Image (cartoon, rainbow, N blue to C red):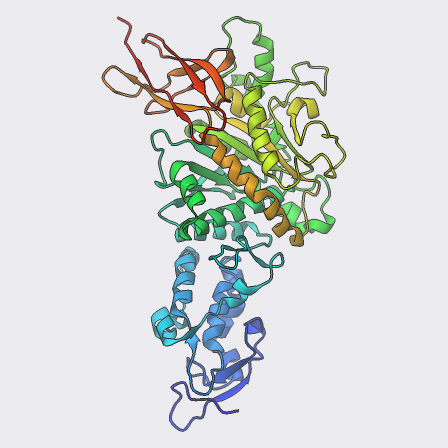
Length: 563
C-alpha cells in the first residue's frame, strides 16, 4: 500500500508497513510510514539509530521516571501513524509540551539535554492542523487495570490516574510532576532522609504554597510508616494527582478545599522498608518483611513515650495533657532518622489534624494507644478530647464504602459494636506511637486508618480501594474546618505567639502559632473558652457551636498586658 509522502527525499516513495519495533509495540496503531519524520527509510535504519537506542534505555537512565510517556512520545516520531491517503498526521504538540514540562527535571537530574527528536515545535503539530495523541494508550485503558477514570461521568472531563504500584523513584517522579503541573497550588519539599539516605518527600496543596497563611488550618496525611503496608502509600499518590487534576478541571469542592486549607501529604515515611516488601511482591510478602526501617526499628514504637509521663503525673493538680516536653533520656536510645525527621516536621508546622494510613485490619483507631494501666493490654484509655477524636474517626469510617458496616468481613478482630472505630489501647496497647506523640507534644489530633486485611494487595485491587477510600479522605480533610479558630492579639493589634487556648472541662490546651492564630477542634454545644499568655490578663468567652457547621466559628481575643 502506497501512502502520501512525508517530505521524503525526491524520488523516494513513502511506503506503509507494520511497525514491528519491540519498544513501540504498545502504540494504539499497528502500521507506520517510511521515511519517518526524521527521514529514516526503514525499520532497520530506525533500529540502528541513536534515537531508538535511547528509547530502549530511557527507563533505566531516568530510574523509571516519565515511563512510558517519553518512550511513547519518541515512538510516535520514529514510527508515525500511517495516515489516510489524503492527510499527513503528526503527533500533537500539546502532548509533547505536557511531557516536557513534567519530565524536564528528570533529564536535568542526570545532566542530559532534552532529546533533539522530541523538539515539540519541529516534529509535532498543533490541534488546528490535525494531530494524533501518542499518549492515548495511557488514557484509554479500562478502569482497574493500568489507568482508570476517577470521575466516571461521561458528560464531564475526567481525572486520569494510573492505578499501578510505584517504585521509590517513580513515586518521586509522580510527586514532582504533579507539583509542576499545579505549581500555583502545589510544591514538593523534603522533610529529611531515611536511614539509607532516601528522600522523605512531601507534597503540599494550598492557594499559596510555601508558607503558612493566617487562620488557614494545616493537615497532614502520612502513609507507609510500616514499609510492607503499601496501600496507604498508593492512595496518597492517587490523592495528590486527583487534587491537582480536579482543581484544574474546575471541581468546586476541590477548589474550596485547597483554597481554604494547607494539605501536606507524605506518601512514604519508610521507603527503605518498602523496597524490601516490594522485592517480594504482593503474593510472597509476609506479615513482617519490610515492616521496620533499615535499622530494624518499628517506627510506630520509636517516638518519645510521653503517655507514660502523663500517667505518672496525672494526679498532680496543675499538670496538663498538652505540650509535654521530650525527656532527655529519649535521646540516649536508638532514634530512627525517619522518626527524627517527622518530629522536626510536626514541631515546625502548626498541624491541626492528621491521619496515618496503615494496613492489617479495617478500622479507625484513635489515642491513647498506650493503656493507662501497665498490666492491662486492652483497656479503654481516652484522651481529654475523646469526643473530638470519636468524631474524627466517625468522619472517615462513615464515609468509607464499608468500614462502618457491621456486616463487613473483618480480619480477625471484632468491631461489631463499634461501627468501625475503636480507642487504640482498647484494641491493643503499645508505647512510643506517633499518634500519642502528636497529641501530647503538639496541638495535632491524629487518627490511625487501618485500610484492610491485606497489607500488600494485588494491583487489580488498587482501583477498587481508591473508590472505597476517596470520599473518606476528602471528608476527613474537610472536617478540619470544625470547631473554632481565631487570633489572639495584644492591645496594639499584634498577634501573640504561644498563647494558650483552654476549654472548660477539657484538660488539654492548644497554643497559638507564629502570628497568634489558633484552631481548636470541638464538637457542637456550649463551651467556655479562655485565652491566656504570660504577662497578659486572661480573657474568657462563652460560645455556642451549632451542629452541622460548615466552617469553624471565629473567636478572637485581645489580651491586656499586666502592669
